[in-house]
Length: 457
Image 1 (cartoon, one colour):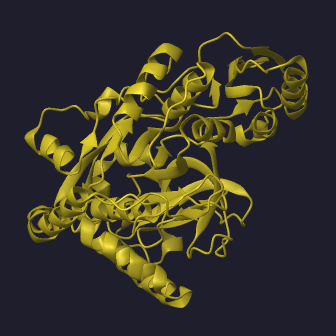
Image 2: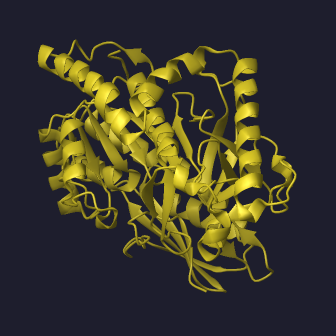
């Protein structure tokens, strides 16, 4: 399939027929992968991507029956083989909600007694909301996530083996590691990592944008803030650049202002990805605005402070149960994000469960003197409405004050500043001394991610 979407989100067919060499590469890569790579690795990621097309053709009752069986299998396995769950009734609602720190502190309790039966890959979290963590993930569970990406990218006209460029990844992820296997995989999959740093200053961002466009790849994949900074630099310089057919942003929410800048600067189809390897969640935002969950990969719950299910439309903690992880099962695992559950019937016509939004990290909130906690979503509205702000961040340095940091466009004016300050003060119940700054640097996580709310006490 060689489809893409236009700027209005409609399917277009102007991507053109691929050259013969590219088609031969795809066929040869697919054949080699299925016959040699998948058996050796024990990870049928490309075959699973093909199966996704059959999954979406099933009706809702068939998918629900499969999910119920998969959930029953993993909870029964956990009761039998995972010390932390020994003696529990094999029903999901009898399992406790756990977080990353609990599993870091008590790893032996969450490892399966039959873990030697399951080959793993070692994954890494950057520590955005706690300690960094190296953890084992079953190769099958990893393959399910990768298959989801391959299938979803196909929907937007990018095939497995099409040349792609990674942008915005910190050096801690080791993309430039010299291992022979890593270099071979990137070469075979035609993945360029040469521009994968996270600097977002204007000069470097413009250089990176020019270099990225000169690569002439089919897809960019990377941090939303990095690609948005590249777009801002291009627009500020009044340059005309032609981006790839598809840009997929990840790691951070894609704010409306960032989305507009990326489309205006590069003319590409832009898709937001939300995912977490720990837990096994993967979702991509459709043209109707919803994040479509890979519900053959995991069960996603949105829970309130008492671990009760939130109704659609109400924000809560995102909690994930991976259907496929056995070496270290992730059952009712709190990934650390706050989200809002959507409905099953999305206007785009795609099947399955959705999230309407991921609104921030669970530990990020402004604390008022009266004890009220304000989550990041409290402040979204004015920044999504004004045209003069590219990025923003709210910092609470002490219990009585709040700093609103903005990166302004040339069009930023006094009325927009007044709108922002009025909203923030109103939502803060006039309990804080609020000021706006347009010349302070933004604070990033150790992994280079842009946080919306930061509290220093």
